[in-house]
Length: 102
Length: 226
Image (cartoon, rainbow over all chains, first blue to last red):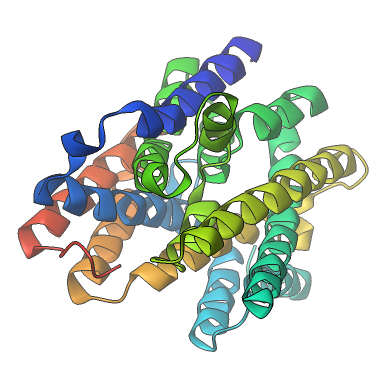
């Protein structure tokens, strides 16, 4: 496990540093700017989908779904970040405790 | 000006506290995935980019290979290059500061600095204070979660597995201001879920992310709308 952790951490840092060493004009094209805007939204949305609706490699409807819905409602109501996280965890925990969803 | 400074520092602390709570979920889930407390803490200290850390332990937990775990966490981390590229002209760090600035470049620090476009002093303060507060509280939360995982039977009983998707939803939410961007989010989310049963752990994120990027370019996401 240690090699995985160290290699992945090294790669993560190299990617962060890359942004500071690459010449500014290199990525200063309309296409590069568009891709820059889209990448975080695309990757983070894919992760949200997997962590809400997938368990291992099975599509499931469990207590995470109402939890993330609670986070969505909190965001629509412009709640602060801390409230968004806690409402998701609290709703998921409550739905599990009631035995409504696994 | 002093009020703006106080507002920036207050936001940084609030974001740090929220991040600390979901760091607890990271710590607990990493130990549940089979990592030791030290390995879990090393990820938060060295990798220090939440989405990649969660992506790595998700692959490990579902029995994926080391290569897929590294590839997934690395691809999820590519966005930090673009964040660094955006922050370089604002921070203009030299020498050791540049090495530290790179490690501090994450979704939250870049996002907070982006709020103060045109006010370089405020943008710098927002970047450094947010990164500092999150570094301390993210690592503290990780330790609490990793140590606590051994004490409680099931971290999921506390709903901790919903904290990460909620946190990333909160990060994506302010960017979904246009229909092309919403389409990117929906296409990526749905295709990741639909692909999950058919592909090895880690691959759905990569393909779904690519699908979202293609949709974004087709629909013509406009630069400068962020």
